Length: 427
Ligand code: CMC
Image (cartoon, rainbow, N blue to C red; front, side, top):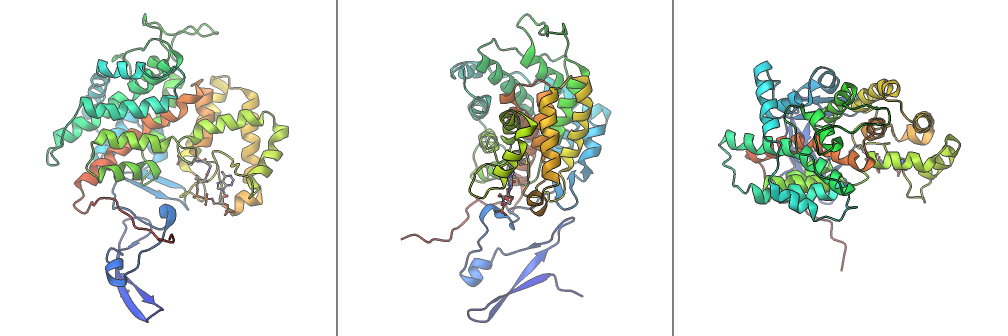
């Protein structure tokens, strides 16, 4: 029988060391090198953690070669097509899908917890009018830690539950407040008769006297297709194993800081263009390209080693074939094209870039496929969501993942403070 270990030979002195191999239930096994430094006096070097498993997790699984994403063992396409975002939240938090009664109770609890302390409205009001909603969102989530200061008892499930429900429920309210403040218009409080996704659209669009905005086409109500599309977008963003923002959340959790401060740090990490900020940059880039005739020039820029320009919404650290979330969004994009009267010119540019990149050697040889942000940018644009709210929408969806990962970290007896070492080459 094969031994479940690996042997490392130090060719400088011929010494060998044996390390156990931990079996993964799916995906690559993991070499357990926890004693490597003690054994050899050396650190391992892995900038960007391309070969490092930072924790054990039972929440989300990605097979980047197959283009597969599972939440608690269930395929993302199935979840996106068959379940609401809040049912998916239940799944991520509790490890199984809710029955009808549980789903209803969960939904009602989220609705009731969606209001925020009035003090937060003062904080939001103190930001400059043109502040980016991501900045306001990260600050106000950090501020939540002072409204709900607590030391959680790790043996008290009810405390964990309350902490998780509160943040999932309040994030859309804070995001909508941040947006309205950035426009200098009055805040709209949650309407608990509306579902999670409808309520968010309502808080963004309604007038203070409780009527929705009359669009140029005379429409008063939010369309069902918009609510469904947004709910799907939330589900697709709900978790993505140990990505940069989740790693940030776990890192902050490892110091014992308040969970909402950890989530605030995750929001900041997500804002960058290489991560969640890419969805906003995709549309900015499509508008900058402006016309299909300009695409070849930008493709050349993306391929030029001496040019920092990158095609936004292309490439992924883990997916090397296709991003299964992008597949769901592409279908949604096709549906919205007809129902939402999308800007044909922008769609044409997006489609053309996708086709050129998918057939270009540079992109093929580096496995650079359109990722979730490429399509979510276009879908959110079709939904007439303002561009500066694209990344806050990613935040709303991802909050459940961050909190589920935070809880898992806290309950893991092997969790330690995050404290990597370095290869020192200075004086
Ligand atoms: N345009 C042009 N070239 C690219 C791109 C791109 N979008 N992405 C990667 N490359 C090239 C890169 O220059 C490198 O080339 P070479 O091997 O010749 O040096 C090669 O592909 C590998 O790139 P990398 O930066 O080493 O790969 P990574 O795994 O460290 O980075 C990434 C992944 C997503 C940060 C990167 O692909 C990127 O910057 N993409 C654009 C931003 C984006 O769309 N981000 C959203 C990511 S998905 C959702 C999320 O996480 O929020």
